Length: 147
Image (cartoon, rainbow, N blue to C red):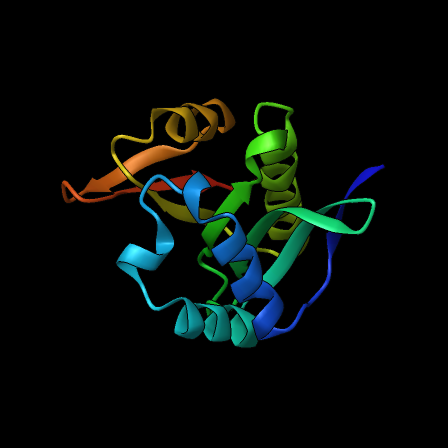
């Protein structure tokens, strides 16, 4: 049974997920950032949402909801394991983030996406995210949250 649960796992578990699923990221994570430091930052500062299938982690989203005036939350990573892509689980993760933001008084959610990751951009656009900045390397997208 596939479920989405908000719970905190260890730094090692976060790192393992990223390493085991490196090929699903548009640019492999290991080639563009220090996975250990990124996992530590997520563990210390982010809300963790896990997609679990019979206790196996098949998807992950980390969101920083720590802006001091609740101006915006920031999705730092969202992914679904290759075998489960295209099943609506990414959509369900976004719904979780938007629900949390709405319930907790955040005005916006932002995220970055690679300009060639058209599939992800299409999903975000369907939710109402709009590009607010494009530096050629990444597009910063934002959605307004209504309470």
